[in-house]
Length: 167
Image (cartoon, rainbow, N blue to C red; front, side, top):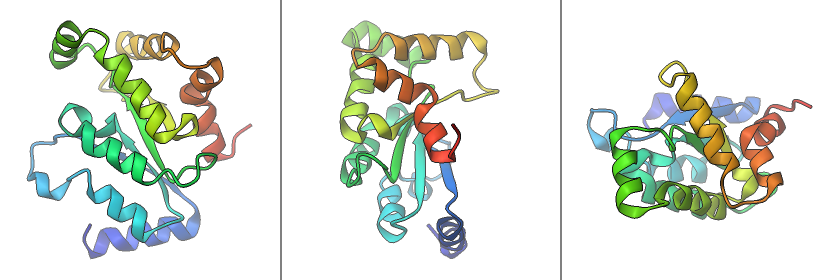
């Protein structure tokens, strides 16, 4: 959130650009990428729209959900989006969560929809990190969620089309 980044955020806001941030642990100083800093970005750049991919990852999901909830002022045209990028992946952590907590990942996804609204969630491929099988699993997981069909359609492309102005 340094001066150079602030210049980028201000210019992106002026141009009406949509930014996508990769969130979660990245093996650097956590102070450099604390998910709560996204609340500061949203506060200082009210017209800047952006996504938090991975919704904070397994390590920062709770603060990421707090950022989504704190910035849900306009449910029709959100400012901050939660990115369903690799949250359903078959990584060891996800498997442990599913075995220990049952439907934990689906519940997390439903909670994110509740916090951000159905207009505030995007599905991301995480390509090339994810292969076709992981991407397919993510799509199938969204389709299996206990949310409306309209919500599923929005998550799987409708919201992003709206952000980018694509029919």
